[in-house]
Length: 229
Image 1 (cartoon, rainbow, N blue to C red):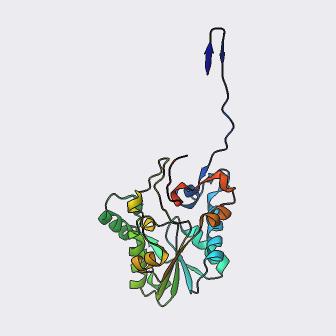
Image 2: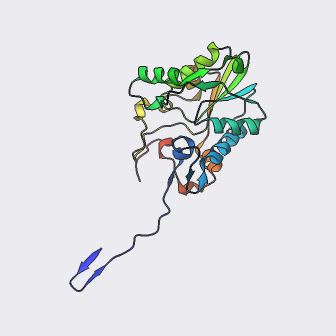
Image 3: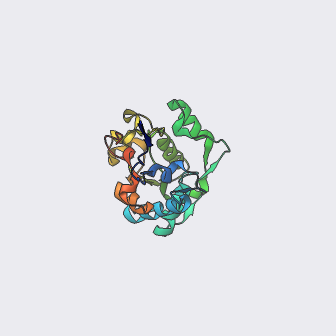
């Protein structure tokens, strides 16, 4: 607003469509919601299909980590032709383990929240689909649970790029030092979590799966630097 002796004049800001948080589509948003008019469930299925096309692997079954990654796993299954199995059941504990303050609490949170279904994975090579990897501790525990219950090989496929930076806009993502992908490449991370392989979507593949122009999406957490613009 401009205040002058004889008038008050306002200048409207330039129109800016803004950048929509890509992590909302991957993990944060409710499955039954829409982000920028796009149904989250449909986008997550598209992410899974993109993941299967870009990062295929020979396996017997696809298992998603409840709840967020299940529609991603469904898309992977549909595109790859591999059957999707319910490899975990929820215990009823509503815990987001990645947000628990200590490692012990995070690992206990995973164990309280998910029980493996042995009959779904025993003797099988498994594609384990998850939405993202933060510290890597919960993923390591999940892979270990599958192998303890008879899975032969576990190939991890992640429906987002590697998290490399905290969010400069306030989304609760740990510091760069805590983000496991900031210090380990895919081969090192697979060894770290006990998986036979691990692959992430690229930024370009995620953008293609969401279906919005790159300039309409914020992907700062998937980029080194991550500073606010």
